[in-house]
Image 1: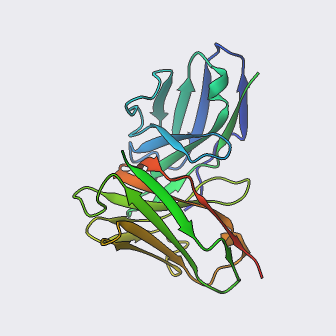
Image 2: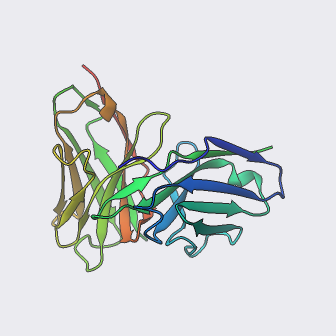
Length: 110
Length: 119
């Protein structure tokens, strides 16, 4: 059970759109539409921002959206804001009642 | 309003057992549909799923930790316990408890507690 692969860092200017990738395998992301995304600010616990691939919990900005193609899930942040500067982690169901997280992406707002 | 708070031994010697408690307020851990998970984050690294427990008491663990980990419910105190035996330096991490909704959704998290494995 290997960690999902995410780019280590991504940056953008305020107002831009950023897309973060999360690559798994045909046994996890490729099989199940059960990817979630988490935002983590320094010193804080993670916050769920996308679940079941595309759904947003109540209270989460609609600037966050999720998608999937084959073995890769993506998180798009539209209208980038300073408060979006954080680490982002993907997670997927991996079968046999197990879960795996991604390596994490640090988003920097220039 | 659901709140989770982790507590326990902050410093554990190698080969000993790490023991943590997650105190839950705002909802009964025994209520139908409630499931609870432990997740950890080594310093400067990503998140690692440890395991979860259903309200029924059924448990599921990360295969890489399965031989050393145990999660249980303390219904009388509304707490979830984590025990990790035979710890090594690589078990040093911030340990989080989280409510598990299914479908890879961990929707509420505690603040986390730092555990260091060192002699």
